[in-house]
Length: 123
Image (cartoon, rainbow, N blue to C red; front, side, top):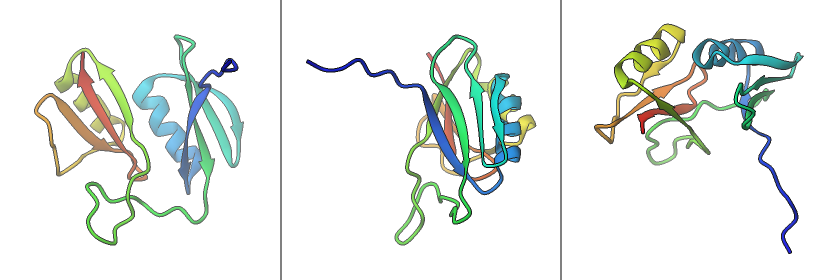
């Protein structure tokens, strides 16, 4: 029998916890939970998995898409939106950068200030 397991959150490593937390607060509009110098959390308003940020002094910015020898992304966030154009403008206003490579017409890939890729898509 499988024990009950609940995904409580996703953790992104960062060299600057306050800055990355502030970016995702602007982007998602979520409330901050834990607030420590090397660890912060954002709480999902719908009670789903939260997003946390952990200090990593040896952080290496990923390259997307990665080529030979590049630091590869280990994960990315998929964020469902109602309007791709409006959400993309909001992401840029929040501090994201539209990635040069866009592999799908109905998805937009952005990079957060530390280079973590995230995708905006419509349902």
